[in-house]
Amino acid sequence: MVANTPLLQVHDLKTWFPIRQGLLRKTVGHVRAVDGVSLQVMPGQTLGLVGESGCGKTTVGRTILRLIEATGGQVNFDGQDVFNLDRSEMQAIRRQMQIVFQDPAGSLNPRMRIGRILAEPIAVHKLAKGSELQDRVAHLLTRVGLSPDYARRYPHEFSGGQRQRVGIARALSLEPKFIVCDEPVSALDVSIQSQILNLLDDLQDELGLSYLFIAHNLAVVEHFCDRIAVMYLGKIVEVADRDDLYAHPKHPYTRALLSAVPMPKPPSAENPRKREVLIGELPSPSNPPSGCAFHPRCSLCREKASEAGSGDTVSLTIAGQSTKVMRKCVESAPTLEDMQTPGQGNHQAACWYA
Image (tube, rainbow, N blue to C red):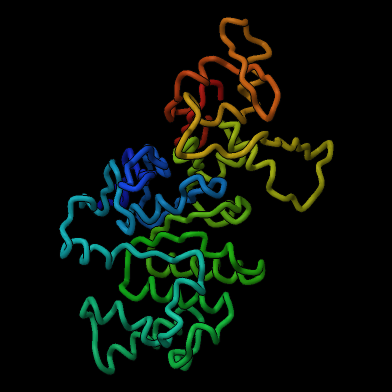
């Protein structure tokens, strides 16, 4: 594969879950967990996917791997259309696409020893058996910083950080090209987080891995990812190279997220900072707002409305108060548009007034 060709391309991905009611379980609506997501991951690159809890980040990762079936859209991995593969073809491509789950305890079978957990995928894909299989398990444990003797232990005998290392070892067992890291450090102590992130970074350099790194901690994402996509209510609202996104955020939602990241030094005249507080709650994906889904919470939409004429605004009740917002934001949904900063890479945002 050519180096500048994306390893993973996702186009207009949709994952809707039916809402059923009544004795006959009739479908009365849908939860639009993922609603038109497009992204790409280059070979050896880490793409960060960030946003509030409930915005659909995990569903994107699991749908890409077909752990959840998509409602619509297309996923191309290494030149193959993932959604059109039959069972045997899908099993073959799963060797190249793996996942590290968020919960290091819940993702490991408590009744299986660590050695068996790591050996199972290797045996299923018939890559090794007998003493060679045991040697591969020992090598995997060593690679993630654990003793080969730990193969005889059960998951409950390990700390959270050690269990996550086992999860990483399992993801590496089939020598994949691409790994979905579903908030792999969110359940760990800060000191352990750095160890796991350093491990993932070293493995990427050593094996040429590509990551989709799902997280809500923007401080972690800043140090680990090459490119970042910001997600809100099932949609991508901004995507840019890491340095460009942190230096020049375009979307008001991205600015609000970045303003909430703790800083090592308090704001000052030389280092000013304004906290942007979002009003209201994250809307329900089963009944998203019309137009731009972010408009009920958007400070930029309200600021523009205060300067615009009455014909360009509408009044909405937000957080119990009557508030003027831009009519365009309520009636029309923006798409991702190029907003490149001079001297920086490709930068896109979905906002009428960014």
